[in-house]
Image 1 (cartoon, rainbow, N blue to C red):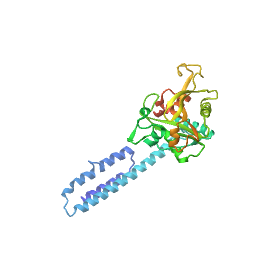
Image 2: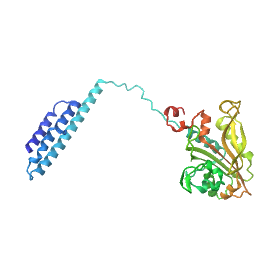
Image 3: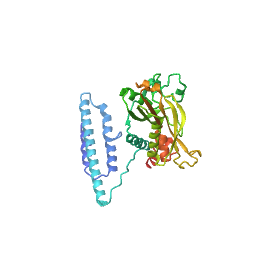
Length: 340
């Protein structure tokens, strides 16, 4: 058997000195080293070898196999190099031709809208504040004048991790955290952009979406200050001819509260299908911060006043870019995203 192993090694090396293509080389490799190959056939006779010689023959067989595999690998690389060389001789490359254009990515429309809003509010003297997406019940509800038995919770009760910990349903907790951190410092002017989570899913709602909320605390802050800030935002975001109107509403954390509409971006306020012939489109909620919320944040409502507002980024982006289905933002369709 020792002689057979040596013979197959030498025979294979000699054969490999000839010219092969890749397919022929693979066929030869299978013939020699395959499951039914010559080397495997020889090794099946190991049972006939004496117990004393079996380890020696086994070691020699492994050496022969490793050596032949190395020889086949070198031959394969040699064939590849020759094939590449021949291909380069046959093909001519014009190095003066321009290279292939690289496809460039773009900023996602949600991110783009957030960045534009941040630029507007920073220009008005606001700072950007951030907070955790996993919140406690205290910061998400109680400190915002939403006690555990408050019916307004039903609209937001959502993804709970424990009875006291949940995915935040709005970015308002960041306002409370900032108030406590600033320790009654005035003026306080912040916006809070970020992801929020609610149990909604349709053409105009998503379980995860983005909000930008704003808060201003100072002495003698009035509703007119709120309206001035929001009018400036609307004109910077949607055009200098924009008008806004405030409609009475209810939010537990503001009093008085107001929904804010802008003149329809589609018809300019004349009335169309998008605005249901009213000439107005709702974009956000706002109001004067409730005294209880100021107290939770460490401020004295007898000394200061404040206004707050909150908007859904997706809604702003849909109005700005004429998008009719919120789910398009999250489907990762290149045909949609490449438009931005």
